[in-house]
Length: 232
Image (cartoon, rainbow, N blue to C red):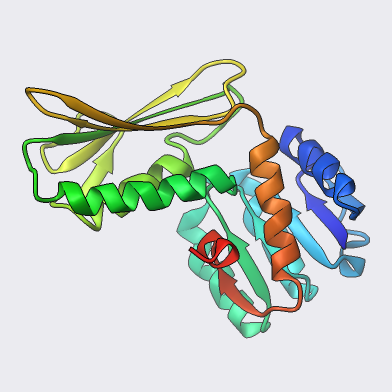
């Protein structure tokens, strides 16, 4: 595949390394100082940019008829605009709050446990996420995805970063240097505590999942998720 990287920070560079190792070619490395020149020649665009740049990047790809993968978080209040454009253009789009294969399996485990634990209200649920200090949004998109799946299968109504009410899931967001990403879901009662944990050892897992998603998206139209990619 010929890949356009929309966002060429640390994640973009890891994606480049993984993609090249799998036989793909990078034809555009877009950062704040570069244009979209060459985008139309790509087979797929992969967006790991910033919340401020993501919608513009995704829009440019869809307008050019290029399938696009986005792993940028913090912009989802505009998701409906991107989804509408993808449908209008008969395009192809995958957004993921986390492209790690392990995290997507963790999502399924979290969902299964949430359904099981709904019958045991003595356990109070909380989440903790820890990332490197360069991560700009808090809580992480992954933590929000975990919380939403729990909310849809429990009596909780929402989540909160601080001063969580009794019907809100408290998310504790920590920023510590050199931490790729750790997510913990806690079920705590007066007598014991159950914890589900996913710990990323490097950015490679996120990059590999994004490249696998880009490979899978070839020749398809529509709006998909990593559930479709992994058939789970």
